[in-house]
Image 1 (cartoon, helix red, strand yellow):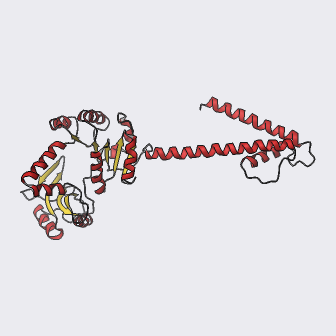
Image 2: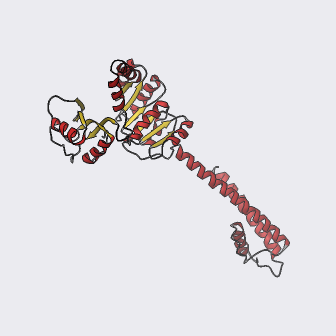
Length: 349
C-alpha cells in the first residue's frame, strides 16, 4: 500500500465516520431524553462503543439512533477482527523470519557451515559435542525444520538464503567466525563459492572436503585453508583396518569428540599467561601430564608468524604463551585440564 492509497482510505473512513455521527445527532437531538446532544457526545459515545468499553453514560434512545449504534457495533467487530488477524499474522511472520535466521546473530568464534546434508549433520554433531557454536546457511527451506528438531537455537543458528548472495552472510556474523566450512554438492560448486567468498572475506579461514583428491592443490591455491579428501581419508582408514585393525580402531576413536568421561580423543589446548607449565620444557610437561592426569602429550604448535606443528619433538623446547599443546586424554581428564589451563579445548585466534 502506497501513501496515496493510504490517504484515500483514511479520508473515506473519516468522511463515513462523521457522516454517521451527524445522522445519529439528527435522530437524537429531537428526543427530549437523549443523552447524546452534541458532536462531542457523539464522538465520545462512538469511541466507547467501538473500543467495547461500554461505560453506559451515553446511549442512543431513538430507533434511528439505535440503528446507527448497530452499525458502530458491527464496525467494532470488524476492527477487532482485522486487528487480531493483523497481529496474528505479524507474530507468525516474526517467528518465521526468526526461524529462517533473517534477524541475524552475534556469535563470535563460531563455525559457519555453508550448505547442509548428511555429512554436514555429522560434522555439526561433533562440533556441538565439543561445545562449538555453529551457524548453518542453507538454500533448502526443509532443512531448517530438520536442524531445529535436532539442535537447540543456542547450539546451532540457521539461515535460509540464496547461497549466491554473499552479503547475506553478514547475518551469521561471518567476519568473526573461527572457520567457514564449505559443504556444497560438488567440487566445482565448492571451488566457485571459495573464489567468490574470498573476494569479500579474504582474511577468513576456509575448510572444504573434496571428492577428487587431485584438486587439493587447486583448492589451496584458490585460498582454501584446509582441503580434505574424504575418499583419501576413508581409503587410509580402510587399509589400516586390514593390516592393523587395532590401530585403525584407536585412530577412529581419537579423531572424534569423546561422548563420555571414559572415551579418549585428541585434544588441543592453548597456553595462556596463567598456564602452570609456562616456560617449562616439553619433556618435563610430557612426564607431568602423564603422571598427574594420565594425559599423553603428543605434539606442540608454535604460533609465531606462522603456525608450526611439531609432532612429538626430539629437541627439548620451552612452552610459551600462545602455543598449543596437543594431547590424548579422556573426558574426565579434559575437565581437569580445562580448570588447570583456564581455557576450553580448541583453536582460538
